[in-house]
Image 1 (cartoon, rainbow, N blue to C red):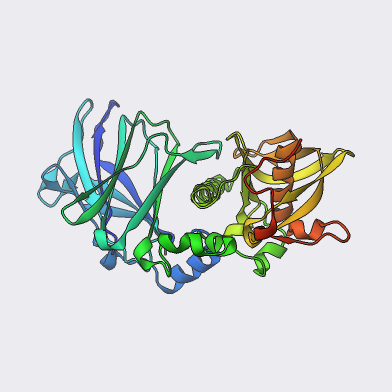
Image 2: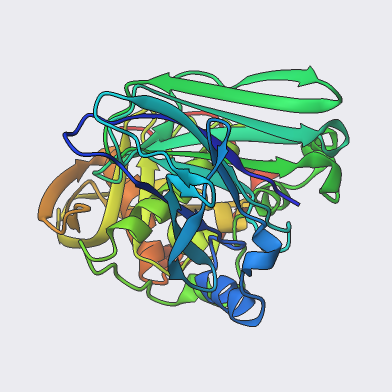
Length: 380
């Protein structure tokens, strides 16, 4: 079971008494597979009985009214009243409210996200897991532009009262920023991290959630986003891409840069992220290559979805890519040399194309054990 408890100190900065406060409960067991999640909640929707929602304002219990009641999403007005009377929050007053609920692990995905919807002085999050689960926790921040990056400060870890406690906080978070924590339980994995060095590169990638060659999703064109209508979903997908890159960095040295496309995580959407060798990150939503140079060069590439091999691919040294921002606006970005190769590789993924489809006549994939350019940047 998961038991989220949220405590908020709220202040009335308006001119009228506040009589209610909106809170929401949203779950997604399989964030990379919306069809699977939707099927799960259609068959087993969240129920009020299992949620066991409670809320209080200071020492007073708060009544509540339902605003939205859906299979995996519920919104509730917490009322500043109960059977004993009313206790509205008047202008310039502040008060602590606390609310919580329960969700079984069969309906809760291994992630927790907070969106900053009101001016906030401080946001802090604490996760508590039984020590025997050997939890690993990481965090990503997503902005209004859908750019995602690791938390700017480290998540703190300590053992307390028989639990692994992970805590993180930030001051003055910007409006509409999203802070997402994800975790896995190493004790539940088929093989421990200590075994990872003995595993093949493709097995390591599969272990961190990368779809492997042979899965049909790698051979179909990804579904574009309808932006800005699907802005929230786009941010969600980008956060998953960034998390995957953070996991990948822990198991391989990407001297040439790195990238991942949504289909490689089992997500049928047109999104990809690229991190260059010098650390710059590009987020691409609905990207299309609209122009490329006649000058091209051959370099060896690798792919997370069959990482046991490398292959020599000829690509243009300059490409123009049209892509969208989260607000729906369109831009054209020019990429050159190594950046162009990284971006073209990921755009190909969104069209159902693998780099092995572009090997030159007579060229074959080389086992990574025989590849001699590992750990070196591409030649210019």
